[in-house]
Image (cartoon, rainbow, N blue to C red; front, side, top):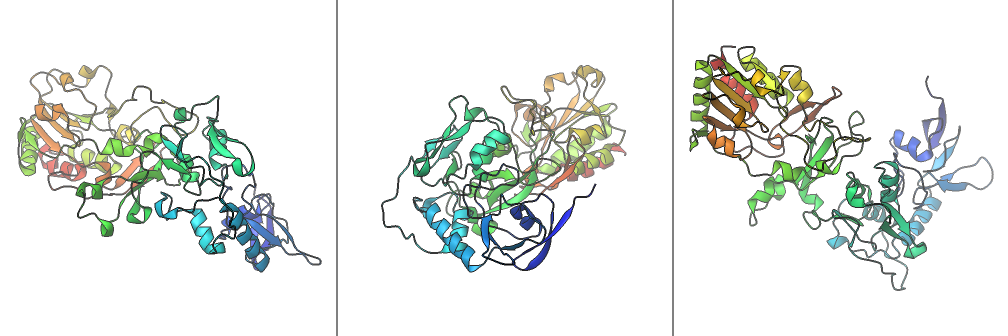
Length: 486
């Protein structure tokens, strides 16, 4: 059933709103941005900051004023967001909000993406009128092992408190005291360290009050670019942005490895998959992707050129009487298709779990986290069967060549006498034990798609160039295809 639509106007422009929408919701739906600090589309409305004040024109008599975040649209309403009275109210509100703010933009991690900076420039632009000493508050108070709070920068929007109450459900944060002595503090009966979505409050914070302890003073946002990607941490496949250094701001005098490292990970809004949030595992992807890499091809443990290793792998596959492939559940849709095209039914494949839940890791929850810790098993299982629990049912004693793609497979399970071809991105002892080892690229070095547990296909883009000694799996499978006879 379609919703009733209401005609109204913002700054003289006719618009429509759904019945029940607030002014700020209707404005956003029509492409009009009304300033706000404490409002969020997926959280309750406290009306704390008052910066979203708008003027409502009347046919007769004086206009009236209200906050756009909590005022429903009515038929025929005429809203003004840029009148002289609203400009004055906005400037006065900014004076109050910055009254005790340290204005330390030069050393603040939020500088360059801070709403307080943006609105001060847009709405006010004037120095504080107050000449009284600022009220000081606690600096660098640890809310958890991951998050530091600078109370002097905090404007008490309470977005962080509402997130833990209404989204993550940890109820781990609250406010103490009142007025200009109010502070955000951990709840006495909860542990913010146990909130696996805690880092979302850093994104929500409109100022530089909430800081990642790991990323504090790490990199300025204007040196970085965001590349859309997918979190491979579980079968949900949350959409993310991987932030890394812009090429035009590459480091020359300092460690050049900093040019190809992940500076941070943030959610990329995707209503079909993760909405506006991600768990902390996604935030920590740098630890996963930046483990020691395998960059050298090997044959019987001895270093060889990449082309030599590929030729040796082709020869083993061509000579095999009963080859078997152990297929990665971290391969992209494109890589899986290339693998299937290359080997068809001539090389039976079985899908393994590249990663299992870590000790203490949340297996599944009410919000985003799913039990399978692999991003593309659904697409892999559409082409191949799952590796049985009794591996010998897939790898019989007469299997003579076993191709192992990706992590998570114990070489001790390979039948005695079988030749092993390993394709992996990371340094493992099993690489040197293989008859042929070929290093392949990681997700941040290539583009592709994953299919999540719900069948939603999400793209990811390359962040960094791949080294010449490393090959993309998709290209490798095409190079090996002649050997299979497919």
